[in-house]
Structure formats: structure tokens, C-alpha cells
Length: 258
Image: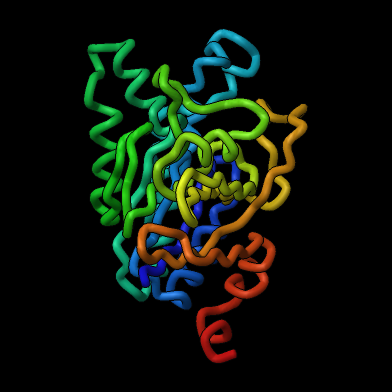
């Protein structure tokens, strides 16, 4: 049995509090998992948002890329500095991290500069990385930021988990939508099925990004403990971020001494 602590879509940015990363590290210390998985979109990189042009009113208040990178480094350091155990740490990069590579592709004169800086941050804090759209497989279970369809694009629509379960060949864990949805698709044959686990976000409780203000979706905020065995997710314990703040927002001494 393999234990995984999983969180996704933290959307870390200079305007949001970072104490939630301390709570997360303390949760990992308590759970002592084999793997600590970041599902991607850990960093928002609002500085590189192509939907808000620099010359617009919204564009003028975007942070500098260097500020976003400094914010990323601080969040990773908060996690690392508060960890007392040593799980394998892995991030499946999301579309918001991919903004760096998209920007460099459009501006060849800076190719490798920001992405190199970002990968150095991950390497310094011992995070392995799977590129956006690719799969990390642990104990036969797939992890990715968001499943891609046959056209090489992120799966979208009202029920991404349903599509992921129907098309996947293994249990799959992902983020991207900020929703909490579990869907099982039964396959031909005896006792054959695949379950897709779309596991919410790790943004501050109740925070909704400006681009999603009119969404009909209900976001779920928190982190998870997954038990993997025999190519399946055997169990999921989900903790809302308010629970984590209540339990792990105290001093380390009080948390571990009851």
C-alpha cells in the first residue's frame, strides 16, 4: 500500500496569504506519506496572463514576472522549511506554469531564462516535475494536471471527471477544474472499472479568481490522503482547508502533543 498526500491548484500569487503552505507541510509531517504530489497550477503567474493585455487597466496592475517567481520560491521554501519527513515530492505542471514556456516560445530572445529560473526553484526544494499534459504513474494510478483529449487539448465541459473515467485506462487523479468530483466508469468484463478523481483546489477558503467570478461551479478547497494498491486508489480522505487551518495553524508543539 502506497500513501500519497495530494493537493492541486494552489494558485499561489503575491496578493494571497501563504500560511496555508505551512499547514500543508504539517499535515504531511503527521501523515508521513510515501509521496507528496502537487497537481499543478501551484503558481498563478498572473504576470504572463495573455487574456489581460499589458496596456489595459487590468493589465497595468499585473505583477512583474520576477515578483511572481519570488513568490513561488517563498511558497516552496515555506513547505520545505516546515517538513520534518522526507516523502518523494512531485509536481504535475499545470496550464498556469505552462504560461512561462508559452511566453518564451513567443519571445525567443528570453528563451530558457524564466523557465530555467522556475525549474531551479523546484530543484532547490527537491520537487521532481512532469510536464503539462503528461502523466505521472504511481502504483498503476495516473496523476496529471488535466487529462487531454484526442485533439491534444485539455478536456472541458460540465463533467470532466465523467469524460476522464470513460476514456482512461487506469484510475486517474487530477485538478484544473477546482471542483471535487469522483466518477466511476464500468468496463466490459468482470469487476472492471476506472475511477476519475477530480480533487478540487488548494486556494484560500472561498477565494474565487476574477476570471471565474460568474462560474456556476462550486469550488472545493483542501487537500487529500490517498491510499494506492494494485493499480487502484483504495481510499481517499479529504480535508477541507478550514480543517487544516484549525488543526495545523497552531504551533508545531501543540499540534503533535495534542
